[in-house]
Structure formats: C-alpha cells, structure tokens
Length: 108
Image (tube, rainbow, N blue to C red; front, side, top):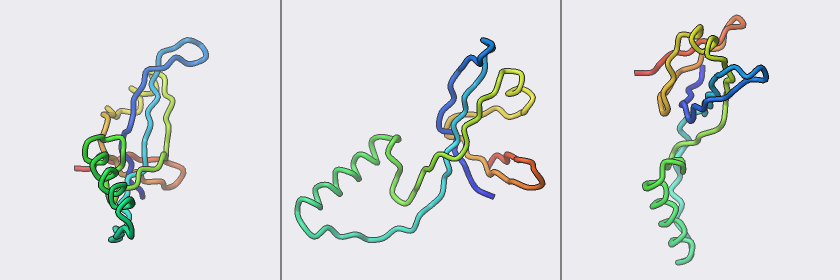
C-alpha cells in the first residue's frame, strides 16, 4: 500500500478525438527530518529563502515531505465515469495493489 495525492487534472482528447482526463497522482510520504545547520552565512540565507518559498508557494514540497510522480491516468470520459471516483486536486488516496487489481481508498 502507498499514498498518493492528486496533483493535476487536465482535459485531453484521445487519438480518436474523444474527450477525456489526464490525472496526475504523486506519491505522498514523509521523509525523516534532519537538523541541518548551515556552516556559513550564505548557506543560512539560502536555507531561509527556501523555507520562505516552501511556505508561500505550494509547488515547493514542504519540509519533511517528498512528492514523487507515481501514476498518470489517461481516461476517456466513459472510463472516468466507470471508475466511479470523483478526483479532486489535493485529495489523498491510499493505493492498494493486490491480485492484479488497483484499489483507490479515499483517506479521511
């Protein structure tokens, strides 16, 4: 089992011109935090700037988080509806792989 976050949902057309969706899921997991103390004043400034960027812009992963692309789904509208999941950006799902089946479980 692993955890993913819906990063992006885009409208697409397949080769036949049918409308569909491209759903990008990123692996969402915590990584150990290490207290890194910069040795120089310049390194401290860089560390402070990175922390400020992480707080202001959601595109930069937060401290202690690692977002790695895991699954990209290309689905026609019919396939999307058949799947029975309404994906929303930033929604988190647990993915279970067993017996040749992929199961999506929405986290609370």
